[in-house]
Structures are given as C-alpha cells and as structure tokens.
Length: 230
Image: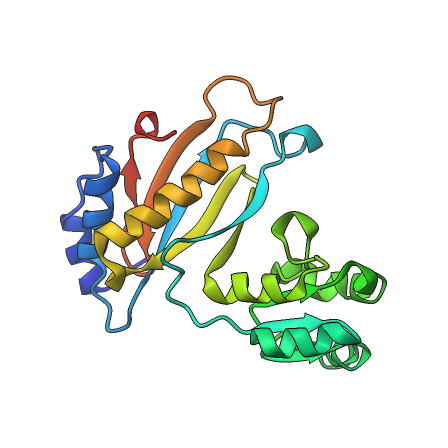
C-alpha cells in the first residue's frame, strides 16, 4: 500500500523499535497528525483474554472527561413521558414504531447512538440484523438500555464511548481529537484504560494488557509500554 507524503513524514518522527511512555506517545501522536482536518486519536489495546468465552468478555462504557470532540447524533426509541424527557435532554430523533419502521424499511442509520428503555426492547430487538453489524445495537452494559433515558442521552452527548473486544481480543476506541493536545488526551486515555483495567475478568490469567498503541486517523501507530499501564 502506497502512503502519502504526510504519512511518510509522520513515520520518520516515530521510532518503530521503541515502546514509549504514555506522555511521549501522545505527544508524538499529536505531532504526527498533519492532515487538513482535525484527526481523531484512537487507542488500540490487545488484552490477554479469550473473548470466545463468556467469562472473559470485556465490555463497558465510560464518559471521557474531555469528551471525544465529535458531535454525536442520538436516536431515542421510547414512548409516553419518556418522549418529552428525551426531547428535553437533546435527542436528535425521538420516536417508537415510526423510527423502527424507518430503520427496517429504509435501512436508515443516520445516527451515532441509539438509546432506549427496557420496555421497548421487544421492538428494538427486531433491528438486530441492521444495527448489530454497525455497532449501533443498544445494550444495558453500555448504558444505552435504561429507564433513565435523559441521563443516557446527556452522557452520549457528553462523549460517552463504548469499549468492547473485537474477534482478535483488541479494543479500539477514540479518545479525542489531535487538537485536544497531549494533556487532555492523557486525561481521556487514563480514564479509558482505568475502566478497562477495572473490567478485568476474574477468569483472565497472566498478563492482562498485552500491548497498547495510539494513532491519529492518518498517522502511524505509536507503541506504549504496557508495563506502565494499570
């Protein structure tokens, strides 16, 4: 794969043979973000677990102290008094059967987060085939299926992110924009990694955090010393 000049220049600033301390890594990551847009900084953490086993799953959600820097569109599927609460909390779209029908018939997914109340899960459950592959299916562990719909919407708007293992036991999560600078990114990084460490399954044996790296959208990965985490 051929990379552009900016990426090649960024690579030159990173020592691929080195594992960095967290501050150094984030500073290098911010410097490597040379695109014309404000690049997102992502964390990639490989865990010493086997996600194929239910007792070794790692999943949860956290509101980042400094948000993600992204404007989040929220769909609330609810009825009755909760509709008004959802609107007042700032949901971009609010509805019930009309919204689920729109998703089913049009394949509409022009939102970033779907929140709903437990009584609506019979309706929302039918959307699994459309929402599941896109990572939009609400889940109680992520706080997106809850009786407190207003709180869920406010958290989503404030920069709540969900973390979960992929098939290779790696968690990929955004921790903000390059424009945040090292210090704000570090606060978000510490909050996310703290939550992941806290979520360590009792069945996990040996080294829990196997490797960790940060990268801006168009930049190279910067490896972080896993011994300095948690």
